[in-house]
Image 1 (cartoon, protein in one colour):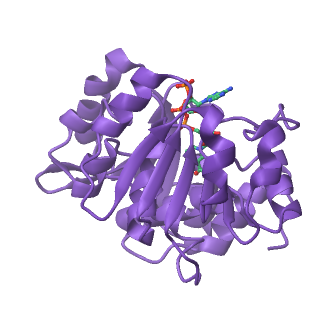
Image 2 (spheres, rainbow, N blue to C red):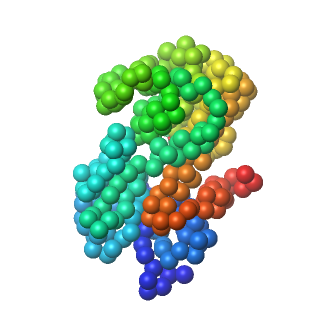
Image 3 (tube, protein in one colour):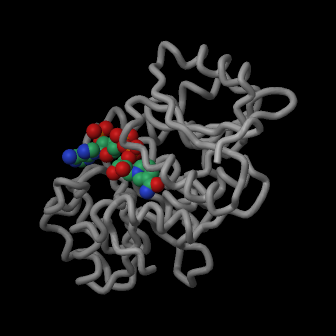
Length: 286
Ligand code: NAP
């Protein structure tokens, strides 16, 4: 119930109508009985600075940041976490006594379903080098991967991606063309699809095309896509005896970390997961 004391949270992006964050966070807020409401705010790049000034003026508690503002918001914040600086993107902002603070919870979201698994985190293969791939690289470092291979189709963009990382030895990051994927797959303990290939409605597509037979059994295949679940890539991985992980848990867990920052209490992760599954028309039995 919204009352005279209700505090405001939200998500900024453009477009924002497709965002599942309001569904997930309001389900959590209702479950906790917290005196908060979470709204979508469509903000254009030209209005970003003014939007933050307005948020400060109305005492917004915090907000999520999505495309296209994850990088542009950084210079407008008073403090940015080291993790967000290394990833080069902020997805969560909260108000402090001295101004806005920002961090990146996508990394924690990516790592969450893998934490605690006994697995040889030696070599990771990341398909794609966009915004989400940046969180995946940081996550692979946290997991203890030594060799991170990143695949893309634009050599200049790949080279820029590689230059943007200053990793501490023994961790190395190399960049590769798609033609090298079959050979790279053989040595990979973790294969991550950080492209939109296979996302609804293009559900027959797989980023590996005909090379999926090269997925090593026993590796972890992680698709950041959460609709459909499983994707074609994850079906192929399961057929090869790999462990399949879809992107829903990343979405849930990055949101849970953000909510805990705003509300200063544990997030109801099961409620958040079920709200997303219901919104996506997925079975809510896990
Ligand atoms: P992005 O910044 O647009 O990056 C997409 C990457 O995929 C780029 O490297 C792009 O290469 C590549 N790519 C796109 N289409 C391709 C194609 N047909 N062939 C080869 N490469 C292609 O997107 P993003 O924000 O990183 O998101 C990537 C995926 O992760 C999306 O499916 C998104 O929904 C998902 N995601 C999930 C979560 C989660 O919480 N589960 C969070 C964030 C993102 P070019 O630059 O050459 O086009």
